[in-house]
Picture (cartoon, rainbow, N blue to C red):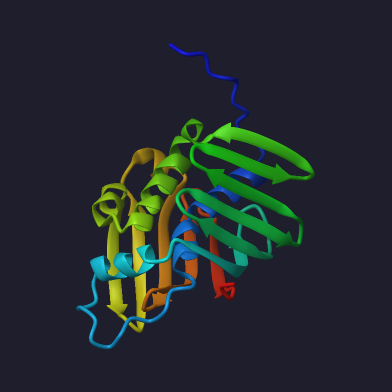
Length: 211
C-alpha cells in the first residue's frame, strides 16, 4: 500500500462551520450566471433545472450570509465571493468581517484562516466529501448522481422554484441535515443550509458580470 502523507484535520469549530457552509454553495456558484430559458422550453422538472445549471462551466457571485449559531445570542453576517471553474475548482472567499477562504480542487482542500494555511485531502472528511461529490454531479447534468447523493424535491415553477436536498449518506447527514436552494429559471438566488447540530444559515447571491 503506498504511503500517504499525514493529513491535518480541521478541529477548530470555525473551520468546521466554514467547510459546512462551503458544501452548500457549489450548486449556487454553478447557476448564478445562467440566463432564463426560452418560453417554449421543455416542461419544468429537476432534469430541466440540472440541464440549465450544467450549461455553465464557470461562474462567480457575491454573497451575503447570515449564520445563526446556537452558541451565540445574535446572528453572524459575512460577505464575500464564490467562484467555480470547470472541471473541479470550487472556492469560497470570505471578505468581511474577517478574511478567510476555502478552496477545493479535485481531492485537495486548502483552508486559510487567521493568516494560516491548512491543507488536507477531501476524502479525509467523509461528510464533506459526500456533499461535494453529490453537488459536483450537477456540473455534468448528472441527475442520477445527484439523486444517489440526495433525496431531491423540486417545488414551484420555472420563474420561481425551490429545491430541497436531503443527504442520503449517514456521513453527510452527520454534518448537514438539509440544503434548500431557491431560484428563477436556471439562476440560483438563495441557499439555506441546516446543519445537523441545529445551526443554520441563509446566503443571498448576486451574480458578477462575466468578462
